[in-house]
Length: 64
Image 1 (tube, helix red, strand yellow):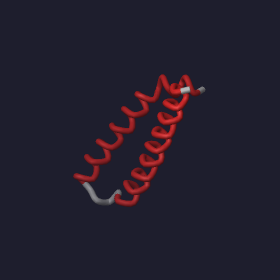
Image 2: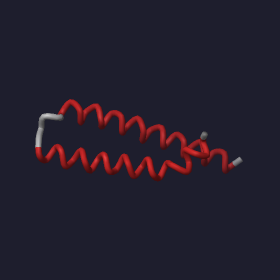
Image 3: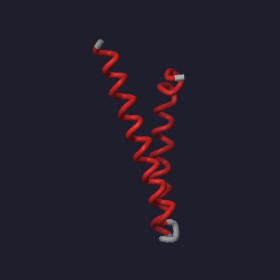
């Protein structure tokens, strides 16, 4: 499971960055999605935090 996540985490980061780009494009054309963008930003923050924790624990394993 964790190995698969390591294989796909670059793809996941690419999807996230594409999502941020799409979000920016949408916000240029309309301000209707303010609430949706707020939720999206919170989800991205959670994913980024999980990713950081995963990287930290991976580095800790390497040190041992």
